[in-house]
Structure formats: structure tokens, C-alpha cells
Image 1: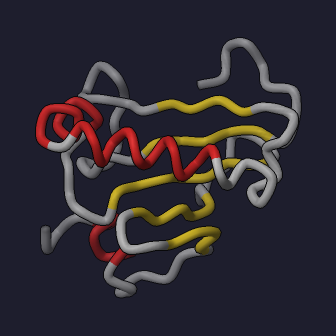
Image 2: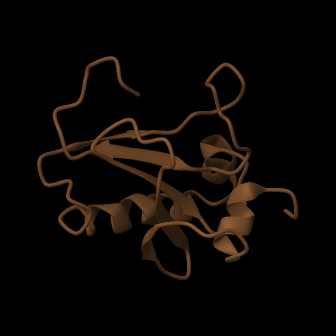
Image 3: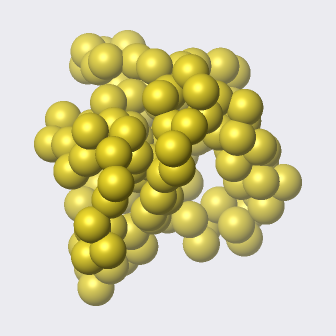
Length: 113
């Protein structure tokens, strides 16, 4: 997707604070953090949202969460974390490329998300 900001970040056209990268996913710092640790975890392949990826490649979606489970200590999330995936206008999705917010590093407010 030539106009997708996350595709441009994945391609290296836009700089980002990378915390993890492999052939399938990229984890970067959120530029507007809502917690002490706030990452954006995204597949490198373009999917519009979590439902799109779940429909087209559920195995790859499961692998994203499996990889996250192996990075908990490295990302400073040992005390716990929250994952959020916004979908569509009513879900306040701001970028049409699946990205999963991973928030932690502190006691989270019950209304955060």
C-alpha cells in the first residue's frame, strides 16, 4: 500500500523506534504513549484490521501473539500488559493497517484502552 504510513515504516521509508523485528512482524514505540510502555505491534503484510487478518490468515495472527509471549521480559512487560486492537470508525481505528497496541510497564487505569 503506497499511501499507508505503517507500510512506509515497515519499508524503512519513515524512521521509527524499533523494539523487535523479524520476517513477519514489527514492534515499534507508539509516538503518543498512553502508558509507561506503549508499543505498536504490526504484521509486515498489509491487513486492514484484526478481522481482515483473522479471516485471511488466522495462523499468522496466532503467531503474532505467540511471538509477543516470548518478548514479555525484553519489552519490560513482566508485571502485566494490555493489548488493544481498534477496528473501524466506531472503534477509533486511526490507520488502516492492522496494529495492536501493547500497553504496560505500570499499573494501568481500568478505563485505558
